[in-house]
Amino acid sequence: MPPDTNLDELLARLHDAQSTLDAGFVRLPPNPAPALDENAAAILAEAATLLHNNDPYFHPLYAGQMLKPPHPIARAAYALAMSINPNNHALDGGRASSAMELESVAALAKMFGWPQHLGHLTSGGTVANLEALWIAGALERENHRQPARQLHPARAIAASSQAHYTHSRISAVLGLPFISIPTDDTGRMDLDALERILATQDIGTVVATLGTTAVGAVDPLDRLLTLQKRYPFRIHVDAAYGGYFTLAGNLPTAARLAFDAIPYADSLVVDPHKHGLQPYGCGCILFRDPAVGRFYQHDSPYTYFTSHDLHLGEISLECSRAGAAAVALWATQRLLPCVPGGAFARGLEAGRDAALALHRTLSADPRFVLPIAPPTLDILFWAPRAATPQDSSALSQAIFDEARRRDLYLALATLPVRFFPATTWPAADPLPADASVTVLRSVLMKPEHLDWTGEIARRLDAATTAVLAVNSP
Image (cartoon, rainbow, N blue to C red; front, top):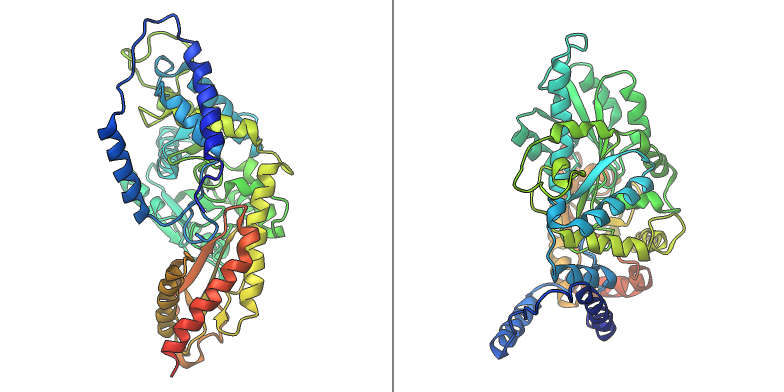
């Protein structure tokens, strides 16, 4: 099945929109674009052939990494904007696309319960998180100049051991200490461990991850806010992957409480190019207090000359940014508003329902061991049953390879063995506290996955049967 069964319709809609766009510039003298001759056609054909080397990320049988095809309207809107190629660094480079960005970002802020905010799009979650932690450091330095607060300018950044590795990297770039906080046996930040560290070390910012990229765990943000009342630290929410699940109506209670606490955090990152149906790269950084914009102030007279209004480049660390990304997001949010109960929210709910359905199927299969907790979002993982973690890891790799030969695309992850019941590997008992195991992992983030869990399970069954037939004693 090709990624676009409605490609002709998409191209027709794009052609109509392009004609409308072109009509706005008919006053200009003709300036034909370079022609794409037969040589260009051959190059495009070669590129298409080379792209066969990718996995079919668009298809529901791809259930491995966090790859989700952009919505057709996002593709069309991006291509439409590319005929102008606006730059959202300054209004001079993209007045219309800048307005679309502001509107789109305001819609995301509203989704998280922030009527007042400062925010913009970025090239992805890494830069967005960089800006959040850079602002945190800037506030630390500013507070240090106020003796009454007596805050140290180099207080540490803390995140869970399951948080994205980008936070330790960013901390190093910013010259700030980084502290990794242990998790509980479900992958959530252990707040008792955090409090013990808070009592002995100076932590300026705690990163709460709402949707870890390995297992989809949701840190207890609501309880973290309670802890914040006793210790002076900022809270940054890394919801690059899981943020849109704030719209889902089928979350477990603990996760729902965490998402409902977002309005009280200091900053937040979400990636529209993950669950937001956008092309790469499209991230977003939001600050609850618009006053932090003062830290971005700079002068660039050669780019800011046709308008006295706010330029997005004045509240961004990045300079040139694709205005097409803002146009694509704007169009998608107009078609699929980010509201509870809407079509977009139902797609998120379908992803979690798919993860729960596959979890139930695998739980009934004696060849697999499931973790202590069921999926919180749309990520699930499991281990082949074996005598030791090393044996399970080897089987995971073999099943992963065999599944690919059957056009089922899974992922592998190395996780702590304590995420599984204590009796999982009796031959290896006792296991070291830091022991790990390589497991099979799926991200069921496409709404279509709910209708494909049966086929995914069938192909996984066939792959596992083939592997065990070879590896049985």
